[in-house]
Each structure stands twice: as structure tokens, then as C-alpha cells.
Length: 294
Image 1 (cartoon, helix red, strand yellow):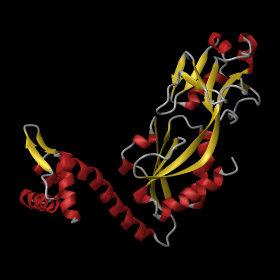
Image 2 (cartoon, helix red, strand yellow; image 1 turned 180 degrees about the vertical axis):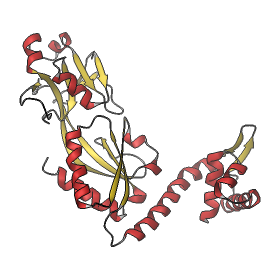
Image 3 (cartoon, one colour; image 1 turned 90 degrees about the horizontal axis):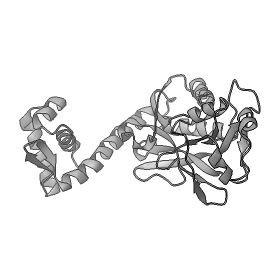
Image 4 (spheres, one colour; image 1 turned 90 degrees about the vertical axis):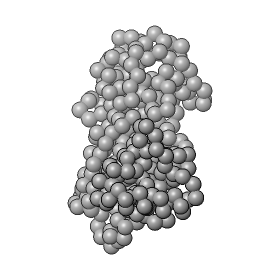
């Protein structure tokens, strides 16, 4: 497939206009049309059609556009990987992570990368669904999940965290310690909600689940922990054993630890087209070595 033809087609698909696509690529509209027509001739089916709203994709065009964007990214990644062979990782590393990861866990990882690769810069973004970010804007995606994500990702489990209930000792002194799932209903409950989950449904160690009515549901893990530290209620969060800097040891304690909870894998996923780039492979290896003891 001719990459210039594919690039012309993708630009028209994204802009909805031959004129806008021609301006974007810096070519004449005649040249652009010729490239798209050549691609349609290769495909043997129409890829675009004109409507009152502009140029839109046919069904065949939609299929080609989805795969074509990945192909263009793979081509760019291949050229980048060739340039980086034999060199220390440098440039920009784009990482997207779930909202609310504890800063005191991320800080030493960033410090390790800066010490090992001083020419590497990190652009970190946080979102409720890291895998939902545009593929072309991600080098590494950190996310929770038992299953390998669908789509063009290579995924590695780097850590397994224990989810469960925590509360401050002061809150439990004032409100009492629940001895059963049923007794939770009389307490202030806060729930972390993972992408695709329902924060009103909590798991048990036996593999079953039960329904609660939390007064707070949030995708930010640290927000839930902060509310628990403030003595406001009982929170369901991952990494219940992780200490919180600046708080007295033992301030937060597990609740119903032998009843409520489960393990959830933490994954780092890499777009398949970037998986062989030396920078990505070295960074991933460093992160995994740091997390292995945990």
C-alpha cells in the first residue's frame, strides 16, 4: 500500500473535506484527489462519499481508516526505533495512568527514570479510563484489569494489589467496628470505582459480592483514602496496606479483612506498534524491577 495515498485518505476522513486535507498536507486538491482515487482503485470499492454535511466514510472506508491509523503509527514507530538503536532513552515518554494513584508511589519511579535516563522527559496524564485515550497519544498506559485489554496492546501485569476496607481507629471508636457485611449498612461508606465497575457492588474473598449504598463513590483512590484518614467513614480501596506519608502509623486499619476484598492486577500496556522501541522496552524493564519487591 502506498503510504502517501493512505495518508491522503486518512486526512480527508478526519477533516471531512478535500480542501482542508489538501491544506493540511500542503498539496493541491487535484493531487490529493488523485491519491485517494488511486487508493480506491487498489481497494476495488468506494472508500468515501459526498453528503450535504461533507465527505464521509463508506463502510469499507471505516474499516480501512481504523486499521490505517494504526499502520501509520506503526510506520512512525519503526522509524523512531531505528533512530534509537544503540542510544540511551531520550525524548518524550507519554504515560497515562488512572486517577488517584498514590503520589508517594509514583515519585520514586519518576526519580528512578530521571536518574537512569536523564535525557528522558515524561508527560504524565491521569484519566478514569487510561485505555480509552487516543492510541496515538500514548506510549505506556497504566491500568487495572485481570484480562488482557482488547485491541492493539501488549500488556504486562506488574503488580497485584489487595482491595479491601479501611477506616481510622477514631472513626471505629465513635461508630463501632462492623462484625459482618450486614452491619456495614449502618456506617458511612466510601467506594472507589474502577473503570467498568459499579461502586455499589463490593466483592467478598469467597468470590461472591453484595450491594451497598455508599455516601461517596469516586474514581480517585487518594480522595477515598483522605476521607478515611479524616475519620469520616469506611472506604473500599486498593492497596489497603500502603502507608500514607505524614500520617501516624496505624491510623488506618483494615475492616472485615477476612470477609471483604479481592486481588486486582495492575497492568502496563503498550501499543503494539511501539513495543519494540528500545526506549519503551528499557523503561518498562526498569519499572518492573522497581515494582517486583512490592
